[in-house]
Length: 460
Image (cartoon, rainbow, N blue to C red):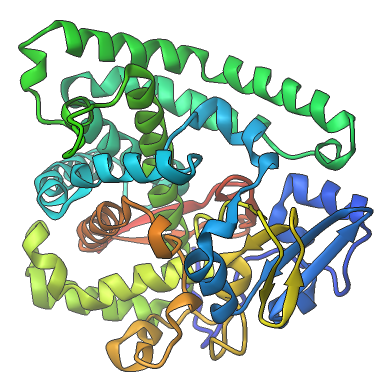
């Protein structure tokens, strides 16, 4: 195994083209890896436009323009129709895919499920699951090799499954894991999605394919919902599913239908485990390449925890731990591209006319590397998220959880989970990248490592 001593090692990433690719080649490259189709100039432009016949799209790479799209004139930018065949079969009318009054009602109903009290109540379960992982690792020889991305995915899925389903979590975790992996692999875009007439056939095909992938998951979730509704004793559970079933509108008293509960469960499960796991996988990779920053992490853990298991109350004191996670999500944002939005009416963003019907993208992978916003954007520098260095940064320059009214409802849950997992594991182990192992970020639905992240376990 090897430890990098470079001040600023070259980080894993695709070698993008120097100039814009022809449209169909761009679609072909993007289908396999969205971020690989982005040419060098995109990272410096405030707005980048692509045209193909009547199809126009814009990448907004300026905080003022992003604020216009996500907040100031957010009602003019709705989820693009092109997304429905991809996301609809899995997420239905969940918070990610719904719009307008439906979204506002759902957000109001579901917000208490992720309030401070609920997240605090889940913290002990997060540390219990992490301690169980450490116990399994303790049985392995020093220097054992693990795929840390897969391990973090299994851990995050166990945590969100226990939070969502309590005693039913084991069976549900398995079926959701299988469905989620197949969905990411198969539900990708094609150039047929923008070809007139053919795009309708493509949409029908994708919708059928998506429903087939989630069929077993749907059966399991509906069965569990039915059992909860039929069994008064199970109604006494306090997991997230129970809270969704008990949620009532404060004005009308209406609750969620079984279908609506199902859609929220799938949205929370898929988003809740995949994004956290992906972030942690990249963070372990980054720490393996930056021993000086890793040493600062170890020092903070020793000063704050003194070898004990971290708790929810420790989180405000684990400041550098949090900065490492923030910087990791800057360089490798799990959601590399926010949901595509479509202009309802003509608008102007940063002096650029955005015609009605145009697709607008906000791409954190690009935004977080904009050299006009971030000094040395390719470097891993957790201290850039200190209070002093963050003070003058535009609010919409950093979007790992989106921003505005549609900011991720589970952001606090995710950050709490990431801090507790990182702190608990880093007290016991250093993780070292396997010599010669290829590390390549692949932009699918999330920013996954194409070949995993195989690492040595080194006990501290």
